[in-house]
Length: 59
Image (cartoon, rainbow, N blue to C red):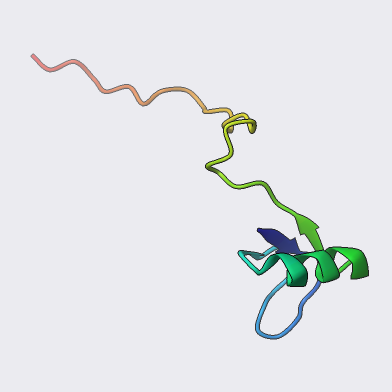
């Protein structure tokens, strides 16, 4: 999975896509994309969450 660093039809900068390994290696080597870890990769920490949602008491 890579994140594009510049606009390249049909992709936009900042867009994340899964591409074949050979294509990803070339895009990264050319500086057109950066490696992006998968959300399923257990070595990546989950994003920090904000405050939990609180509701008012009824009654």
